[in-house]
Amino acid sequence: MNISRVYKIETERLLIRCYEPTDAALLLDAITISLDHLKPWMPWANKEPTSLDAKIDLLRKFRGQFDLGEDYTFGIFDKNETELIGSTGLHNRLGPAEREIGYWISAKHLNKGYAQEVVCALTKVGFEIEALARIEIHCAPQNIRSLNIPRKLGYSLEKTLSDPINSPVGSMVWRMNKAAYDRSTIKATPLNVFDIVGHQINI
Image (cartoon, rainbow, N blue to C red; front, side, top):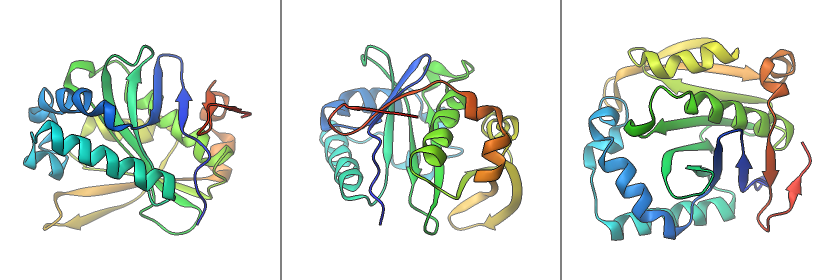
């Protein structure tokens, strides 16, 4: 098991970092105002909103998984860290040297290009720092806003899955391998990347 080196990523407009329990109120606010937007695509959203205490427990879980190398969920913040713009992750749902990027953006911040900025950042980190062989993005065929992101960035559509119990709307599987990344425009994306103690990682 390879434990992630990356805890914080600075893009042109965003700060993407490991969650802390103190982010719970920001997470609760972002989810609450986004429920109508999230429910068609995110099964977990149908159980929301939950309490602030539940959010604290959730973020403790995320942080524990991150530190133990079990899964990597990041909050997406403005540069001042006063607002949660969304959530993302390099998830350990696939095989060795493979990750899945997931993401959602607050309804307050749609149509600003934030999700594409985040996917560019995590793709670059995944291949250049975490030494992944492949990255996947899964999204519903009906979610045009979401599926346009891997399409624009050079991911290849591999297949569409049908799972009426867990995903009634189906799931498109987009993939990128290291060779495709090396040919992509993502490689030129400027980033500042930091480890758990705030030391910058060369990329």
